[in-house]
Image (cartoon, rainbow, N blue to C red):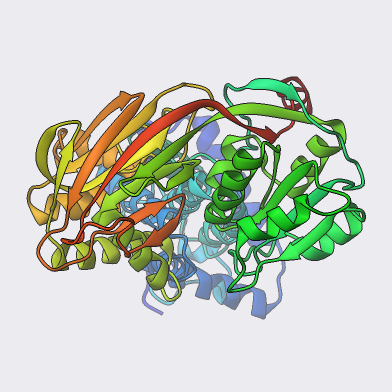
Amino acid sequence: MAPRPLPSARVALRRIALLPAVVRRLDSAVGCRINARRTVPAVDRGYARLSRAADRSVLWFGIALVLVVAGQHRAALRGAASLTAASALANLVGKQVFGGDRPLLKDIPVGRRLRTPPTSPSFPSGHAASAAGFVTGVALESRRTGIGLAPAAAAVAYSRLHTGAHWFSDVVGGVAIGTAVAFAGRALVPARPAPRPAERIGGADVRLPASPTGSGVFMVLNPGSGADVDRPDAAEYLAEHLPDARLHELGKDDDLELLVRHALASADPPRVLGASGGDGTVAAVAHIARLVGLPLLVLPGGTFNHFSRAAGVQSFDDALAALAAGEGVRIDVAEIEFGDGSPVTVLNAASVGVYPDFVATRERLQARLDKWAAGILAAVLVVGRADPVDVVLNGHRDRVWSLVVGVDRSHAETVAPLQRTRLDGGLLDVRVLRGGPRLRAAASLAFGRRTSALLRRLHLLPTDAVEAFTAESVTAVVRPAGDQPTGFAHDGEVSLDVPGDDPDGGFTSTVRVIPGGLDVYSPSRARSRFAR
């Protein structure tokens, strides 16, 4: 083991001059207490190895890589960024300003000493700053993951005391720097908030038929909807909690409207139509519910469940509690009418252009990649192989990458209004991604609301990339780009078949908002606020 070089008189005096005597006495007392403790050799070797593993933050960058593979790329990125900034501040600024000599090597038990004693100034501890910066940064994005990593960060910080590499004040200072840097980073780039229980905004409360046991309920289940380990199996859950409901699992060739017509023609016709599945399944059942004038019961059984969250139904329990109490909300929907006169009910949004192809490609890639990476790759692939489509929108001709029409207002600054923020605004939220450079189009498609807003603030994405306006109705004449089919999508369901009979592959459609067009079971706002 190489002996630790003696500190220069300037470095040693700096510690005496800058640190109060009470801090130096505390450092000495803590150091003596730790050095006097008897520990087994395996513990001493363990702390020494852990301390070496954290040299140059190798340990933390390795954990960041694991987080990326596990799909927690935001937590990994924020942790690595906080670590880098904290390490630079501690080593390049803190040590040069404060410095100070390290504990004397002769006071450290031989079995605890590091193979290569550090020679840089002592205050603050770069290891502690990096550990605190990384774990705090991760915790700001994922509290559960941060809590899981906190013991490792604490062990790394303590290892610097156990091996005699630092004084107690060095470690405390490093932890303070790392934590402060992570929170400063959050002030500059806000973390994604933790999911909150859904609480509907707007919509008039209505009394609907109450059915605690499911009597009078005809429920359609889509077994192919997105899986969620935290969600019960819909068929088993409903069989237990709604024993009197009629359940039907959708088959590949089932005709929803025909199924409901048969049920209505039975001796005991249903008073409630229900759907368990994703937004596409729910929209299809909602269309039938509108046609026959029945209220809709929604169980969030899909991957994203945009509509059920907007309606205040976060879980199966929320839906059944509202059904048992007869609580509901009257909401706006939209209706698309094509040139052949066929109407389609829309709950969230409808789109044409590259967006339907982007959604379909992203879903295929998500089988192998996480959503963030799949979105970027899908945007590059789709925009790279497509061209803008010709659209005549309310009489004005333009070339656009995508045209998306949402029901009521949604979050701003995104190419598609997928998550409505009101249920009764009486307006359509229209987003137009105009034809332009492919890179701009791909970036607008790939990034979500927060990332897009950040890129615009950094002037990396044009502020006019997406045109947004509201209207009560819009009429669009869509013409395909070259030989490629004109895609159409609504509520997460994608169809590349032309929804019309135009010989050139285009179509004409009119989208209009239908205020108060559907009654949906939803916990009352008063009870939801009280429960939360």
